[in-house]
Image (cartoon, one colour):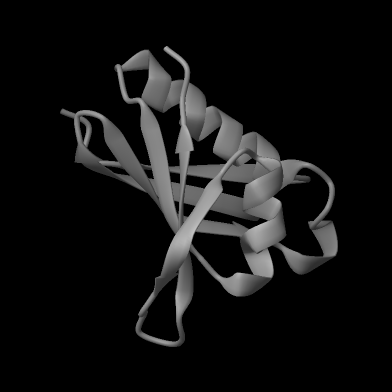
Length: 104
């Protein structure tokens, strides 16, 4: 079973974004990290990384992505089809627990 992956986005030989996930179980993956260089935000890079993650998850029968989102990222995840479930404590401040159902 896949225990997680890291993907990077490269522009002009420089890493400008990355994402990683962790396999929670056979039906759910957790978005562990998602970072886009601030000057390149709103260019679709983060969206592409999440969509690649969703495609990879679907290809192995996963039906759900989960994430604990920073409140500032709530709108981003909502645009990608994630639904807020509620606040959860994190190491730094409360986060918004979200999930996105995937089509098989």
